[in-house]
Amino acid sequence: MKDTQILSGFHDPAAAPTGNAVPRPAVLVFDACHVGVVLRAVLFVQSVVAVAAMFGAATPLDWLTRLSLMTGATLPATLLWLIVACSLKQVLARLSPALQQAAGIILGALAGLYGCAMLAMVGSLQAAPWWASAFAGAMLSAALVAALVLRAKGKAPAAAAARLAELQARIRPHFLFNTLNSAVALVRAEPRRAETLLEDLSDLFRHALMEQGESVTLAEEIALAQRYLAIEQVRFGERIRIEWVLDAAAGSARLPPLLLQPLVENAVKHGVEPSASGADIRVSTQLRGSRVVIKVSNTTPASRSAQGNGLALANVRERLGLLHDVQARFQSGLKDGVYQVRIEVPA
Image: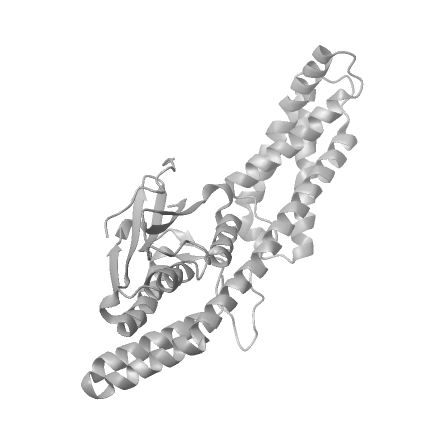
């Protein structure tokens, strides 16, 4: 199956434990190291500053003057808070959640003092409001930390839902029985192939049950998808035609765990199963500058639409956003009998 251009609208732009003690895993309750976080933090602070500048402003010109003066202090202070919070990411992760949030608020107070010092240095203030600046910085940073904590908490249920969906797919009766029946049929005629089939099934179970981290490499996700499709290849034979176009340079890109497997499973379910002649499935990866493009495509029966993919694709989209925020791109669509999912992530 040749590649399709239906979704080409994107622009390329712990220490080891000792003894029998179980170490507490390093968990970062707020992460400032995302472009989307930086943009939202700057917009939030500047919005508050813009409203604050309205107090005491007699005319729009007076408001713009006040806003420019305050922006000259708050913008560098906000960026300083983000840079320091991101730089101390590994250190903060070793603290308890409460201490991490307290550290973020303290950094905000220091950033407020930094902004006040900048205004004092240029002589814009008759009497520098040190205490007011510190408290204002602490309150703004508290709001930012609270928003980032909620964002981090949102990753847990999304990842749990993905693991549950993947496990349910693995233990789905017809999938399991068909796989075992295929292995039984191969035991005498092709014992080595039957052994490989059972090994692939075992790897899928183990991967579904093991504890996953925040992200895995694209190469690991490709390996899991290959095991799944190898099992389905035995089941469907010539009805399933698989093409892999993989760029080795793209293998280190980070993805949420269990991201590709639901996509290839959808390709089998909605492309191969309902068609007497089967379907072509194409999985491609490509490094383009600082971006990695991933495509999963499958042909579909003429009488079948793209309906039925909504839940799996919604989960994929949500988890991509949680991991990469605005740096991730996701598209899906049906054109000329080919359904394609296109993903972009940072390299």
